[in-house]
Length: 193
Image (cartoon, one colour):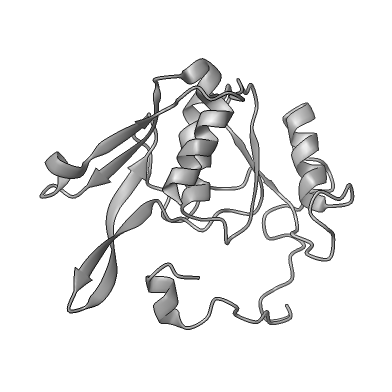
């Protein structure tokens, strides 16, 4: 949810960026005057002042998760780092409308950061590629994403074991097919999975 992204932004940057723009929500020209808005950092009890931020992402990282990364980028010295894989690319959101006793969720707005950047429809690019090994528990010291993220935080460079983009990932023809657990396509439209 966008509200969760905004709250996380407050905790990540509210200490030193209080009252600065976290993100902007932009509607089309016909709806802009009544609906465009800005979200500002708010200081919370446990707000931090980050000097570095690395986001671990996959091709499924989208929407509000991308909003956090994009919105923090102007405020982190040298920008944020992304390890793992490029994100999905969904800098837009939906509004709900009641119509004929149904609820329609239509894409109605785009989000941008304080620098007015929000055109990442092809995803936010990974700085260091790393495999997403789902057989390793999250946070385990052997997690390739965690190893890559910590190295990138420490040195600013990708570790030699990090994959080059497209280098050692299995080709789609050879990769085992994963079950689509998202459900029927209409649920994706409604953002209901």
